Length: 55
Length: 178
Image (cartoon, rainbow over all chains, first blue to last red):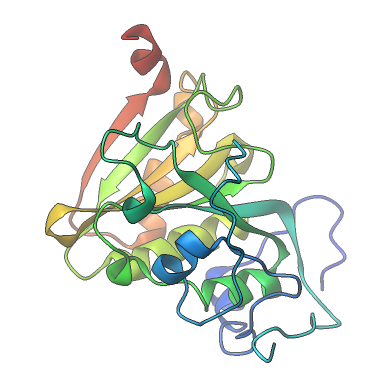
């Protein structure tokens, strides 16, 4: 499996089989302090950059 | 930190990279423009990284009223002014009570698993928590004139929705009013 040339299609049932396996945040995950509490279920070190208005 | 793990060795790549964005109601200024406080959270391009993020993010039922959580293809900003979105629009469904968490997950899985017939037309999806804890899920598409490619009916089928409100909105209509 996984050797497809073009579209990588995955069914819902197939994707759901990974839900119990992948529990930890990805390597290198960073989040701004002002949204960490509102969004995340776990506590992670967050970045305090209230001045970083990059958009 | 113990909460950060190594990537799994054999990962399953997705067709596209995706980015979660979050608009936090508590950091939005009272007079602020809707969407002006939207922030990218993290990107993912494998099945495994999707779950690593999703499993650590609140489900819609746990988000504060006013919050918007987006999942958009990489390089597309969830703003109707984005050049890729500007000619498109959005399909919005109002979720039945208590169904938002499941419908949001199934919407995400259908998108990242490329289950829509016209997946290239899709920019991303957003779940919006509004007063009365009512949630809306919208799918943004690139080309509003391509009716065939609109994902609403496929989405409804995939969510196995039996009762819903749904409406279609073209972003060009919004720009005409400004």
